Image (tube, rainbow, N blue to C red):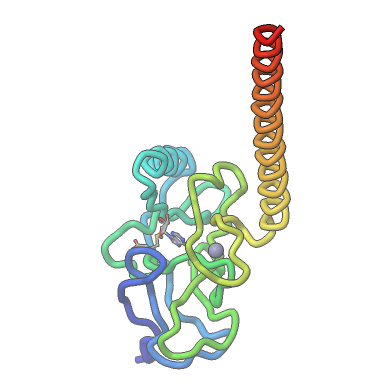
Length: 194
Ligand SMILES: C[S@@+](CC[C@H](N)C(=O)[O-])C[C@H]1O[C@@H](n2cnc3c(N)ncnc32)[C@H](O)[C@@H]1O
Ligand SMILES: [Zn+2]
C-alpha cells in the first residue's frame, strides 16, 4: 500500500488542516477529494445556505467542488479528510478533475510538516464573505481564484480611494463649519465692543 502523505491537525489559519506527513515531491498525488454527488440545483441551495450562515457567523464552511456541467461534489461527509485542506494565496497543491474524480496533487516540492493548501478558485462575487487568513506574502485578503486576484486588488484600491476621499471631504466640511462658527462669534464680539 502507498504511504500516506498527509496528516490531520489543527491549523493556525482555520479549524483543522491537512499537513505533509513526509517530504512530498512536486506532481505527487496526495489524496482524493470524495463526497456526495449532487445536482447543480441542490448544490446552489447548499452554497446559498452556507453563504447566508457565513454572513451571520463569519463561519461559512463550503465543501462543494464543481464536478461537471450537471453535478457538483459535496465533500462534507465523514470519510473525506481532504475536506480539511485550507485555501492559501500561495498554494502548494492543485485540485485536478480526472474523469469526475477530484485528486489533490502537489504543485511544488513540499516539506514535511508544511500545511497543504490549494486555490479554492472562488469567483469575485461575494468575496467580502470569504476573508483570507493565509498570511502569505501574496495574500490579497480574501479567498478568490488566482486568476481573479489582480482584479480584486484593483477593486480594493478603488474602494480605499473612495473611502479616503469621503473622509477628506467630511473633514473639509467640518473645518469650514468651524471656521463659519468662529467668524460669526468674532462678528458678535466686535459688535459688543462698538
Ligand atoms: C473546506 S473547509 C476547510 C477546512 C476547515 N479548516 C475545517 O476545519 O473544516 C473551508 C472553510 O475553511 C475556512 N478557510 C479555509 N481556508 C481559509 C483561509 N485561507 N482563510 C480563512 N478561512 C479559511 C473557510 O471558513 C472555508 O469556508
Ligand atoms: Zn490569502
